[in-house]
Image 1 (cartoon, rainbow, N blue to C red):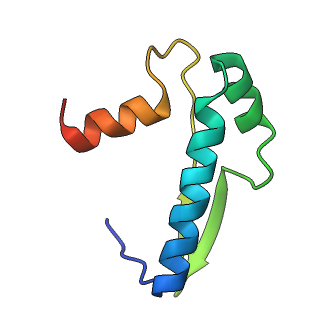
Image 2: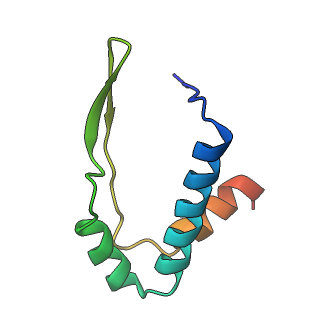
Amino acid sequence: MINNIELTKSEYDLLNQIKSETCAKLSTMIKEERLAWFAHYPNPINFEKEINGTVYTVNTHFNNSANETIIEKAERIILKK
């Protein structure tokens, strides 16, 4: 199931700013620092949220033996490398 979330331009701009700042911060870290950052992330990355009577469960998993960063993976998926 795919759900769309409608954002105002200011909300979209804010999310893009946060994403850019977070990616910039994470790109300066070594693998162990990134794993520690996600382990102590200020907001829960595993959570449930109810929207219009439907409960959505979000679970995040990390592969400690991965050979690419999340940025590299996102680029590979988006660019279909």
